[in-house]
Amino acid sequence: MSTIAETSTSTSCLPEQLQLQPETTATATSTSSNPEVRPTSSIFARNEEAPIHNVPMRVIRRPLPSELDEGKVQTFMEEMKAGDTFTPIEIIKVKSPLKINPTGPAETFYFAMGGCHRYEATKRLGLETIRAKIIEVPAKQMRVYLGAGSPF
Image 1: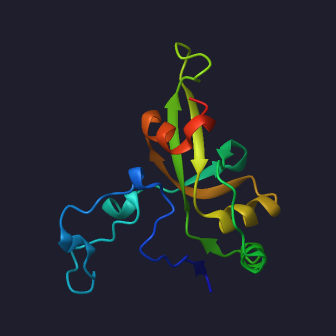
Image 2: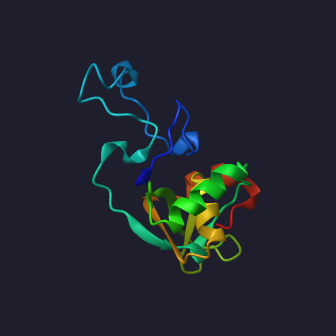
């Protein structure tokens, strides 16, 4: 298999506040009945041409613990070693001053909330970068999601 795409149900790896909300009930219907209707579980559903970046693993923060299926991680590692290309993970980018210095310069934070098996396989293999699409999100929205653990 040359590409691994994780199948998804009606849930998204993104917090509810960051998900694209359907404008009408028609958007929740099957895409096979209307080719113009796109899934709304990802912010990228609006733009299939969203650029894919090679994001350095060292800059990515994972604020939530992952529940990993060890077999899946091992399979992904084997497939990565064989040269398979995986679906990019979604990285949330936030620019904001630190809460300990609110008048200071804005710093850039990169958070990965989903893609835990691809992330873990990449990490264990010691790869320096991971393929990702980047979502820019206001600090205010991420503060709500991260709570007291928010650095900004």
